[in-house]
Image: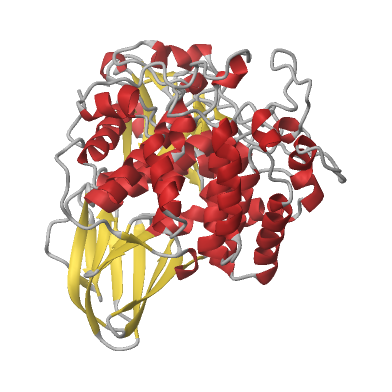
Length: 585
């Protein structure tokens, strides 16, 4: 049964998101990943990006072939080869990421590329693209996302008309309703044609409707809600996650949240909250889930077995993107800070440590939680994860802060500045910290005139005995772990907030049945022992780990000293996520 998170439906107005341009990130892991991925997309040839669309439409297709999944091969055999698996599949996601990047940076050459790609794509719109594609619904979803973001964030005046043409062309090649993965809906096609993901479409269709694209997109969104086999049982508390494709079905939960936000459907909110509670019950300590891309049935030993029988533990950029979206929706609707905790854990221990996307199509796909793990590039070039990573990297900005009529909510502790208007005043809030390496967080307020509003700070669930000072004076109110602490007062330029989040070492067990298989934690970070051996360690040895550098810790074992590091600092070392406790004490 779902846990305490699956509570009754909230009545509060959802928190609002800031725009990408409202938040400026200082140099750090998030900003570096954003710049690196956008640089790869900006360096890609227009002709290469359009090549599979032109080929499938029977047009001249000059330019270098990108290869990998993006390549079009009319004789592709999924049993024998990789290149040609999903031609053009990431185009819409890349356009989306570039539109978000323009909104974040204001750089005109990024917008110019977005608009130019949309015009070139519009010349290729053809039913042949969907007829020849294994994933017509998947591809349509990503194209809608790219055009939606082109309209909203890059101001492309033709985005809606191109989306209307895309939709009119695509719909005859889509299923009549949501079809669960692995079910046949295109007679005479091989098994690979059953891996389409029509059930993820409603989120972007609802968003297009909200942004003014037209009522047809609301109707299409409702048509593709996966109610009968997924949302209906989840809303009733029945765990149907076992055997589902991990990334796409977690991604589909964002469609349920959009159904709640657009239609007011309490059923879909219950489904999303229940499903997320169920997902937490089968997640690794990193926040990752779905070894070998499959969710597991309740009580299954398969998750624990994956520590020895799989190196494909978590589909990282795709899963990180899906996870950050659903936690963002749930946090906005419920104002439950624990969703922010979950988002934070996921990002620091998975996708922020992903190897960078390369211009030759090499991409990081799986995190490895095997007792003998390694960070490696995927064998696939230009896989789905090369599409979600740039989108997720852009979204670090909108994951950091939220707002309502009373003030601001600080969700992520990243060196950054957010600016907004409250009443008639121009307000800014700047974070200055080295979190999660250091426990002290600092915030500085700017206000064009003294203004009364609320600043709400997330107090992580692990942060026992956190302390807060405003302008050097300690706040006497208890800081409740797992909640937002609200400070409503008149704020002036130069006001300072200092938050101390004790980063004590702790051990988290794999689960109740494997309580002696544990991970070493410090704040939101998993500290991964750097070893190629299956470690057996005493609890007190792990908890006595000492800092041995800015991103290194060290602990003793019977066999010798072992270093540990967060996922973002592992490099090419062998590592293990979990160790086994031996003896007492």
